Length: 347
Length: 271
Image (cartoon, rainbow over all chains, first blue to last red):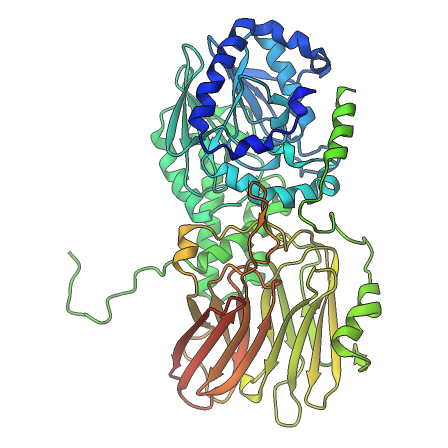
């Protein structure tokens, strides 16, 4: 019961580092009690463990399915999982409902005696954060992009108003658990003999995308920066996302875990499909705008050749065009030929 | 099983913090709001004909993005001295503020067409009511399935969006407009158009409404398009309309928002 006690007011604490230092004795304690502390919450062990697979030693992923979130699937559609170190476990994304979070927690307990010390959210979308509440416990620290708390705050009222009708979930403000630790640029998390390198990205899929690199297994966990099979959904910036896609391959990794798609894929080859789609979208929208086409025409005409390549194309493609169109309208015009100084040559 | 108690607790702690009606409205194509209240509120007992001979409205039946729903109103005849459309009012029945925008046209407009993007908060009719120069009212309507467009979070707190706040530009369909005929033109306004319904859950503060209320477009000092706007206009309001220049001149726009901020822009037109 106690992790249901409202704790939102503690969010107002302006000193996460103080909170962190206060928490560390608790963390040590939870390390001591280790695997048997859950006996005190035996009701949770009733949750059926979520099916998971190891993609590398200590790296476990549950594969989501390419479904449009609805009241039947409760938005339990994303790839979520955890990484086990010598001292503790980091959860990466918690699923589309508190129940899915409980089931992920049960999967952790069925896999390892190690306690959970971190819950990392790759971004604000409901299918990645609604399980957070299941993990609230002493010694567990939530980790996210520095804009995640703001994004949760801005979206919560809207998400709350939609949850019942669109996801069949009854949610409250307590279901939005903001990060205790905010990643501004990069941050290393030590799981004991295993370090996770977290990187906060500029506006791309959303404005709060965080990626996780597990140095031990050379596994890159990209969350929804990478869609495979499921059509990429733009909720941040089309151009920003393309820029991020160009930069990501500088990370050397053996494998990548997408937010939607297979539980593991070859890196950086896995980016190719998403890159092709988004590049073609940007190209075609620019061409449409140059030809003075309207947003309606663009939404009806652009990118239909990609339809066979992606699932949920009809659910998200037109929306991607609308969002990209509105963004590109304000793109700085491409450099004009130097009309005013025709004699001047470029270096 | 274990979730049963949790769900019950959640139900008790549930608060509709947004103050908005929860979820989508009536499933059916509901006319009651219009017939029982809105029609009278905006037009009194004036007769309104759905004649299909004056204007048409086009909107997506299912709105992919409820905060960015493209809406097109097309007139069935050119603006001439004998017959023209003075004003088109757009009402979205089930939006928190049903009055969405009005557009006044002149003969300088050439053609009383308008296209824009709107926020749609529920399953609702979107109505365009045109007033012709004979004082008669003509209505076209489209049913749109959308939800949450007015409270949807907006992504305009980016540095780019702040830097271009108040910027405007005109876009022509052709390189050079044709004199003496109706030329399509697009006006883009960089403005967040905050509805006042987006709330910050941590501070529990509503982002104060901040939206464009007035847009006045003129050509060589003669009005072409006059818009009264409200919170239904999407972020970065965008209008496609016509103007009919008889000679070279200057297209000018003044806008004002609800906080009294004003911006203007010019575009010279040289056929």
